[in-house]
Structures are given as C-alpha cells and as structure tokens.
Image 1 (cartoon, protein in one colour):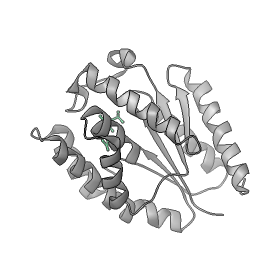
Image 2 (cartoon, helix red, strand yellow):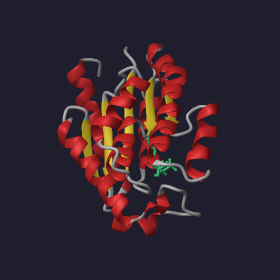
Image 3 (cartoon, helix red, strand yellow):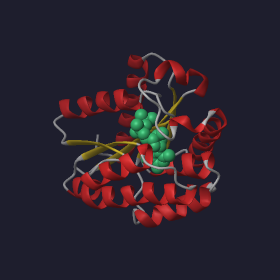
Image 4 (cartoon, helix red, strand yellow):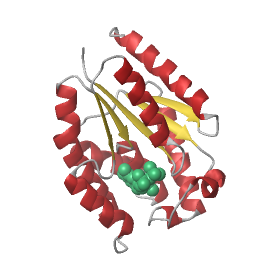
Length: 207
Ligand code: TYD
C-alpha cells in the first residue's frame, strides 16, 4: 500500500481541523498509519516560525512568504516525506495552496511567484487530494475564538482576495481539489470528504 498525502485548505475558522480529525479516525479504523500535522508548525522549528509569523513583529509580504516557505521546506523534509516513504496517510491542516492564496492572492505577491517559490521549497511535492473548505468570510466572526493573530487582523478585503485565490486554484486543478461548502453540517461534510477520498483511492486501484 502506498502512502497518501491529503491537505485541508480554506479560510480561518472553516472547520479544517475538525474534518481532518474525522478523516484521520476513519483511516485509523481501516488499520492505516495516519500522521496528522499542520502548517505553520508541524515541527519544533516550525512552531518557532509559527510564533514569529503569527504573533511576532510586523514583516513585509516577502519576508512573510519566506517564513511560511521555510516552515514548509522543513516540514516536508522532516515529517511528510519520511511518513509517505513508510506508506502512511499524511493529513495536513494547510499546505502550499495556503501560501498561494494568502501571500499570492491576499498580499498580492501573485499566485505564480508564490507557487514557484514553494515548489522549490518542497522539491515539487504536492498532495494527491486537497480538500478546500470554502466559507464566506462573512461567517468568520462567529467562528473565530480568542485574540486574532496577524493574519486574522488583515481585514475583510484581504480575506475576500484569499478566498477568491483558493477558488481560482481549485478550478485550475480539478483533479487534485475537492471544494466543499463549509457552512454545511459537520457530519454532511465528513461524509462528502470520505466519498471523495474513497473514489480517488478506487481510481488509484488501492482501495
Ligand atoms: P492557523 O491558526 O493555523 O489558522 P487556521 O486556524 O485558520 O487554520 O494559522 C495559520 C494562519 O497563517 C492562517 O491565518 C493562514 C496563514 N497562513 C498563510 O498566510 N500562509 C501559509 O502558507 C500558511 C500555511 C498559513
């Protein structure tokens, strides 16, 4: 059985971590080794970078993009590739598409430049499936808890650009992306994700 790499993407407060935990449970019930992880912060260095980029001093957009890319490069080398090499299922809360959407779209560095930087950082590794939990940013205040971090404070227009960039990217890569309405009930979303993953595995011939 080969390793399987799945990323969860979407705006802040879209319910990614809940759905990631559900899917992890589903795979574990099938006896698969599952590695659940996140960006930024899937490693010890990553947690330090996470703290700097989310709660540190203000930085310009290129510095921000490089901090996320640094976290990602180390995360791939340290956690993701080794797990895939031992045939585990890797579920990550955010990956490269977050940088394309937030730094490329939100901050305006452009999708192409940010993708190029990050593909270099991860030496070309892309998920087999990307679950995009799409949520109208108007729902945001109700879902977020605690003090807002630097990205959450970036404003409504920033989050609208980020959402548009995610949807554009999904439309450009229909084989990899599944777009799900994050306003739907949790159970419904979980079932939709499982159906999609099942179908993808069946196509691959390893279900
Ligand atoms: P996190 O608490 O993980 O957000 P969420 O709960 O919404 O998943 O914080 C990560 C923040 O960093 C989030 O606002 C999105 C942002 N981000 C980027 O801007 N670029 C990236 O490449 C990644 C991975 C995250």
